Length: 158
Image 1 (cartoon, rainbow, N blue to C red):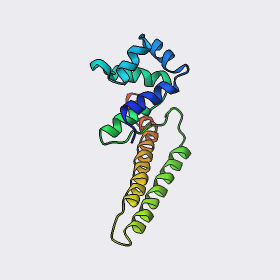
Image 2: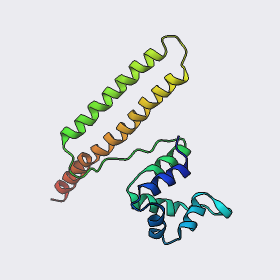
Image 3: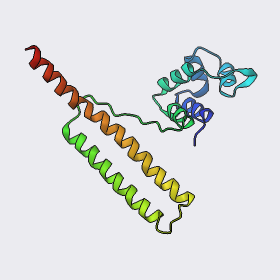
Image 4: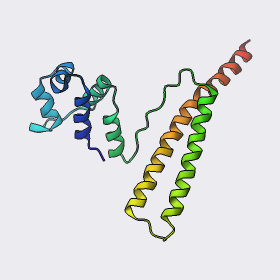
């Protein structure tokens, strides 16, 4: 599990020029940024600053850490510009395969009627992938729904 501080550090390392360039982009000194990251002298990093850092680097480490801290999982949704039916169908097939993998892992894990920590981690990994794929699939379906809605509106208004 990655902590918020680890996510901040990972994001800073992802920025070309590292600490000095990131602090400059945020309009503060390196010392000021370090004080916020390491929570020195009662300072901390605001959510707005963390989101700016994430935006500058086009990374998701901070969002992932916030999701984990909240007991959830961050799922980056695909860009849904020009999605074909084949892409949506492939994503659905992947989802079905992942559910099959979960079924297999669960059966194997429960053969001895005891779920070990390692087995639980494997199950959680598959479940997290299923959740991610489900959200991606849902996002891929939206353009098809919107097309139907547009067509219905156009037919209604002539």
